[in-house]
Image (cartoon, rainbow, N blue to C red; front, side, top):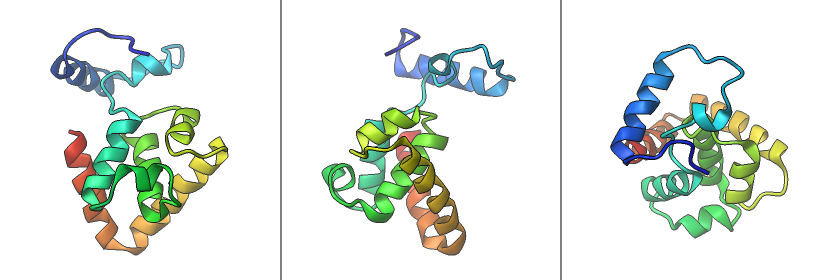
Length: 125
């Protein structure tokens, strides 16, 4: 569901303006997340960065790639947990929270993963 109508460039400019200001809790998440990457885009970017197919992240066990996709969905995409879970074919929204926390630990422990995350973020920009 799109809250704003416009080109991708315009949405990115709105995203920058929204990110630059304090957000009141009464502003719906859909409006706060305007111009953020979709979960489909996140999965595609992670797949490209890790040289795998998006299907492997969505339907397979996913491993580290699924963990990174969940983390990026939460922190870059600012998507709802249920949307992330549905995209990654997971039954539990709580699992997304676990994956995001797990990714934080993995990123601190393995500097190579930072390169994959950086490449995926670059593809999302």
